Every structure is written in structure tokens, then in C-alpha cells.
Image 1: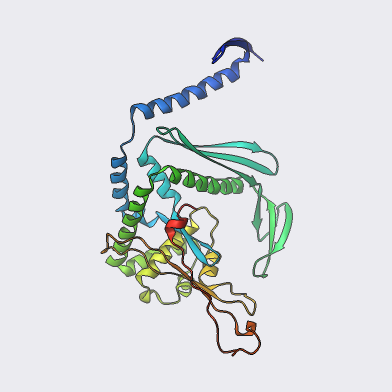
Image 2 (image 1 turned 180 degrees about the vertical axis):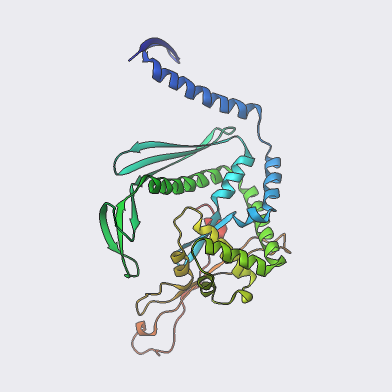
Length: 345
């Protein structure tokens, strides 16, 4: 080990001591990199009006507007939010932002990861940490190290918890890193400009859908098919043939596609259960139906972007109190979810 005498200036004077030459060089290198980033941010500050104009221009692109949102099913309803693709584009246009990911702990069973998003101009940092278990769930345990097993939610098969391979672990880690990066970036962006971008994306999507609804529907069918979901399954999910799909159906399906790519672990089964309820519900449980009701139309530029989720649950007649008419059902109170409340969940 090579050491050298080093001096360090502090608030109370100069300190002298022995340090490792290698570690000292690494510290100096890291310090220089940080100082360079903050110096560039100081000399080339962002223009917020240019950021607004550039972001709204991007929202006019149909390809960008199609991937800007996602809708995650939770408890029979859906939580709306910006996608990681939108967040990455917004961070690049906002400028002078730094996103760093580092592994803070690693052993045979767990890995700790820290994600930091910094606004170099405002000297504001948002951090998040998560612990990743080095396991995955698989239907087949052939050639794998099985740690435990359980029955699937519908009871049709056994699910095995096995040790993850390096590729599986990397995929799992990247999904969580994307989620934390998205949350950190969105926290640092101006909220009023995000609201304008939300309206602009909705107008662009509606315009594309209205221009040629059938072509847009076929594009969605192709995207579902790329994810192993057949056209018959999609039509059964919507509840009608493709020729009868409305603008709300197209918007809902477009968001469903993005929710499966958002990195939150949403699957086709989750989407079907959120819309139609579990196919193996026990007697006495109500069937839950979630429907996307309204999004701002292209010919209403001043309207708010609305995403209303209606959850209508009807109790089974067998669960009624004694003495009531068994042919009658009592609907539960209607609730709704405003996407602005849960946008950055």
C-alpha cells in the first residue's frame, strides 16, 4: 500500500496526515467531476420559457403523446401518471439535471440501490433507496434453486420462488431504477408546465384517434400482439368488436399498453381483473367494473384533462340480510379518481 503526506484545509486550520495515494486520486477525480457539472450549470443556466415551448412541441408528436401516460390498476380502479419516457425527455429539455444510480449494499440474497436526481442550478436533490431481493417467481422450477412455493391467485397452478440469474436480477433492478428516476425527475419539474403538457398530450392523442379510428385501433391490436396478447383477447377485454370501439375505448387501451411498460409490474391479468373482476370470485362477492370515462377532446383546448374511474360494485343476492327480496341488489357508492391527485404516485 502506497501512502503519502497530505494537507487538507478545514474551517479551523490545516490538517496533515497520511492517505492512500489510490483513494486520494479517486476522491480528487470525483470532486472534479462534481465541480465541473455545477460550474457548467452556473455558466449555462436554463431558460424555463424555452423548456416550456420545447416540451409542448414534443407533446404535439403523436408518437411521443402515445407513450407519455400510463394507467396502473389498483384495487379495481386506475392510478394515472407520467411514463418514464416522458420524464427522461422532460429532464433532457429542462437541462442541468443529474441522475445517478449507485449500489450501496450487496450480498448473496439482497442488493441495496440508491437513486439520486439533482437540479444543479437549484442545488436541490431528491434521493430514493430500495432493497432488491435476488429472487424471482416462475411457474417452472426446472434447473433452478427453489426457495419456496405457493399457489397462484386463481389456484390453477404452483408458483415457485427461485434464485434470480444475473440477467433476471438486472431486469428487475432496471425496472425499479426507472420508477425511482421518474419520481425524482417529476418532483423537480415545474408543476404548471406539466399540467399544460398533460392537456397537449391528450389533445394530440384525441386528434390522432379521430383522424382514422380504425387505423389507430389496429395499431393498438399490433402492440398488444407484440406482448403475446391475441386480438380475440383484446376484443373480449373491451367487450365489443373492433368496429364498435369508441374514442374512450381507444384511449383506455392506449393507456393499458403503456401501463405494462411502465416498470411497475403491471400484467395483462392485472388489467383484466381491474376491468372485469377476478374470474374465480367466490359467491357473495360483487363484480367490479372499471371504465375510463372522459379525457379532454381535441376540439376543446381550454378543457381540463379528465380521467374519471367509476367503480360499481353490486352485492350478490345470497349475501343479503334475511327478509329482503333476493332479486334486488344494492349498489355501493360511486367513487372517482382524479389523475391530478395521483399523478406522481
